[in-house]
Image (cartoon, rainbow, N blue to C red; front, side, top):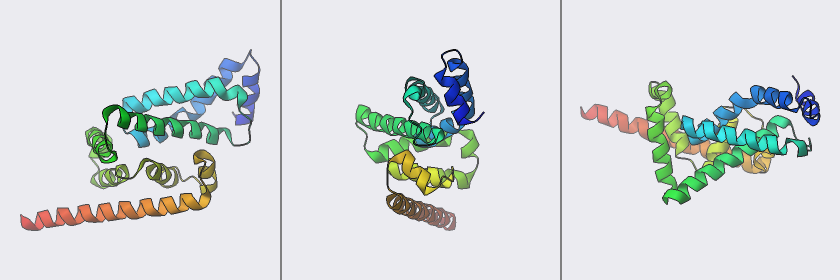
Length: 190
């Protein structure tokens, strides 16, 4: 079902629940994986995904349609992720690196990624990025989102997003190269 049909049905109290269920079915998996890439932990991602759709339910009647529905939902999900990570840092008085290390430990425990050494290196490198750079990298690299749409999701200019993505890619490349050098040095020492 197209977004405009969902929105039309949502406006009618008789079909509101049906329309919302269709919206959730259409976007739940995309939102979950967007959130999961940011917070890593399944339970946290699951909870945040529910929070996103609660906010969507509460605010869908006020959606002005000046952006795509998908973009609007992604913006809510993005804000929830960034707030969650900031809250986690404040609650446990953790600096950025400690949160990244905690997420990396959870990542290694996730069997689908831990079994693929290259993907695990990439994910560890991504987790070392500041939250907003990680967000930009994930949106561009994994979701293949155009910069213009990313600008709507993040409320950031296209130029700033391109610069952020470039810096993130460079940092990831440096991390992976350094990790490869360390592993080669360790193998040579044996």
